[in-house]
Length: 254
Image (cartoon, rainbow, N blue to C red; front, side, top):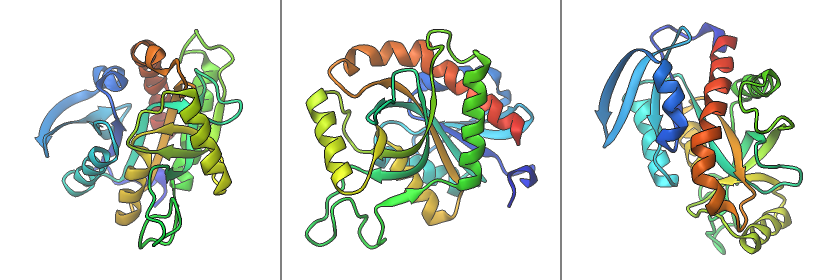
């Protein structure tokens, strides 16, 4: 179904890992109504003329999968969009840049020798793709947000990248670890732009249910030895503004 033909009763889910990443969106939510389900708070309302559900995935793949399932089963969402932060891995991916995911891989999944490393058992694939139409709209929204200068004056040269995201249940925060991770994935044919902790899990759930999914990540660090220093302040002062402006641009384009 084309995005501009969504039935009015079907809300779009805006998902984030941390509360700070959704503060700006919650402040703009019209006619907000909170429901608690599966140990999580879900905020229903209208945002820029569209029905939405705002939710926090919590951190990690299992928590994110639970939240995505609840959004689909309990709230009947039509699409899921994930906004958040990530550590940059790819060449040229710098702090303040934005990565829009085309597909997702679990960097900590290894069921070998029964299955090749990184392959999801019984699916016959290592990557789950984002929805192409929704991803294209999200990419355009991110480009427009950065071009407007409203996202963050602190990063005037920020760029938008599009490509592979790696997810795993580990906060990658050392230069040696990030280098080894990048090299191992590249050796298996996976040139990764950034690393985070939820996207691949949500992508797999959305694949199972046939729900379109797209994700955008603001680069908070280079997944190196400075990650623990930069991360908390960046989320509060920068990432929330990126999420606000990019989601606004996305919803206005529908």
